[in-house]
Amino acid sequence: MEGELGLIMAGVLSHTGDMNHYMAIFIGGLGGFAGDQIYFYIGRYNKDYIYKKFRHQKRKFAIAHLLLKKYGWPIIFVQRYLYGLRTVIPMSIGLTRYSGYKFAFINLLSAWAWAAITITPAYLFGEEILQIIEVAKKHWYLAIPIAGIFLGSVWYFFHSVEKRLEEKKNAVFNRK
Image (tube, rainbow, N blue to C red; front, side, top):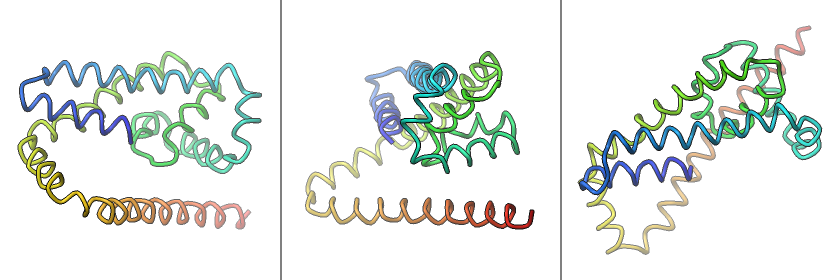
């Protein structure tokens, strides 16, 4: 979430002329790329640490591994949009024998696409975003309930998606 907020800010700053739009996409993509590369290599070279540190996340690692087996390289491209699995998927892929070069190439393209998809709408709708911020400044007391409703909705959505995935996984394993 922090990365997206930074990219949205870069889009708004590009809109106001304080930042170059294309450079913001380029640098934002490199930042996302570097983060996922670090997670990948943590998985590649620190398997014992991951198994010990993330023992409560075994289910997420299993889901990430199943997604990689089922979908292959496209999961690398979309992993940055999968809430709750965003850091787990690169580490999980690092635990496998997946090519580091192939991961890096797909990850770089994905990071630049992610940056463009996030920055460009903020660039195009920068004036509207600035107007919303002005209204929020005047009516700051509404921010907490609105943020609570928004975050609760996001949590509910992803929780229900994860629950459905878990039910499908259990149905597959129970058939065997």
